[in-house]
Image (cartoon, rainbow, N blue to C red):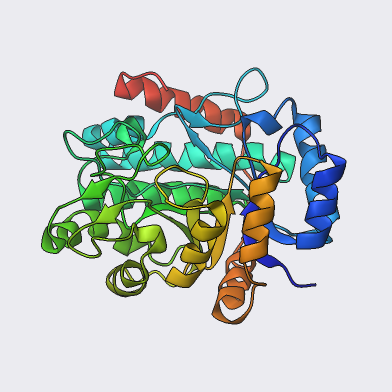
Length: 341
């Protein structure tokens, strides 16, 4: 059975009759969960099963943003708070191996939480390199300001997720760290010269080009394409993401409903597909918008289908580990950094 080239959210803790009908008719490739979809472990696990059942795909990817810090959809009382990226950065500065170990452990523990629920994809790691004066939307989520350090920690996070049989999504390619606005609310423009972007921002993503999936940045890079953000820029996707960075995996957009993008949801969806994204991401669970996205996305076919199949096939079986021991080790490492999670 074929799927359409979009990932969708839903409105609440369970599916409405209208949502069930929509999913059966449109067959999205995958789903993404948010706090509005989360109450307790049994409820989340049941919802995940329900979503897959409606599209007739037992391995349909279910995504979530579970980074740690201020971006995690699963939290107390049922799930622990995990460290923000800045904690791994601080540990890395004390001892690089400590930083990498903590990043790997945190991701492995997150993966165990997700696997318990049937969630197979985490929108992590970040390879954004923030600069002074940038908007705080990335801020302490980042793994530092040195591209090599960021890439090394992001790789450790990837390894932790993969050890727990959870697929990573690299974000926000080709970089959101310089943005002086939060793309949830308005479109950021970066006027930095291409040479400097290649030295810093893009350099953090290059060592991670082998990851199975990546999410675009709703950011205009005026020296590359002054008219379109990366998400809807065929130039940036072809020359930078696929070219300079060398990413060949499944490329999904950031959320099509974010205010950084112009036009109707249908207009935005067409632009995302035309630019070369393989899959359109829609997050807010508004059914009228979901219908617009579905109407404007093609069935997965050709290279996009090959990339989607390759991404799912790259998921590794879980490795055995002692969850309690891993959590104790992570807490001890956080203490070394002199920081809270």
